[in-house]
Image 1: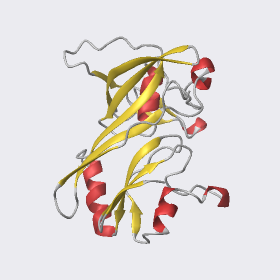
Image 2: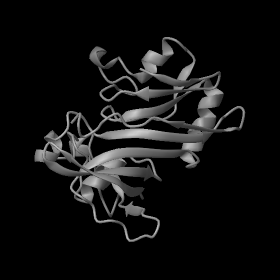
Image 3: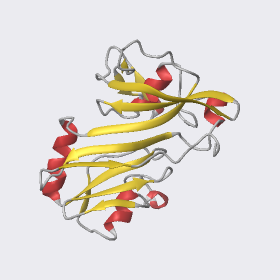
Length: 219
C-alpha cells in the first residue's frame, strides 16, 4: 500500500480497492489500512474511512491531538475531497455555466438491507454532492461517463447512492448497480483522487493528488 506522506502528525496512503479501512468482525477481516499502518507507526489513529470497494487517498492521524484536530476539520467541512467515478450512461450536462451539477437528496442507512443506504425525504439527513463530466467512455460495450465528484457532506455511501438515484450508477458497484452496469467493470470504479487540508501542527495548506488507475482499456 503506497504511502504518499508521512510526518509526526499525519500519514496519507493510497488505499487499494478491496481493502477495509478499519477491522471488520472476525479474524478474516483483521487486515485493513489501519492495521497495516499501525505496524510501522503504532500511534496511528483513524480519522475518516473509505468504503472497502473504493480506492484512493486516506489520511490517518498520529496521536490523539492530531486525530482531534483532523476529525474536527472533517466535521466542519474544512477538508476538500475530490473523487473520480465512471458511471453508466451519459448524464445530462448541468445547466450551470461553470459545468458543475448538484445532487441534494437526503440519505439514511437502509437498516433492513445494511450496509446499504437510501434516499429518504422524511427521515434522511441533508446530503450534497457536486459533479461534472470529465469524458465519455465505453466499458465492455456499455456507454459510460467519467465524472469528477465533490461530496460536500459525508454520508455513508453518499456518492454511490446519489449517482444511482440519478439513474447513472457507478460501474462495478455490487450494491447499487444491476445488470450490465454491475458487470461492466471488475471493481467499483470510484477513486478518492484529491485531498486538501490544513496541517494540524504547522497550519500550512497541504494537498495530495492520486490519479485513478482504472481506464476503459483495463475494464
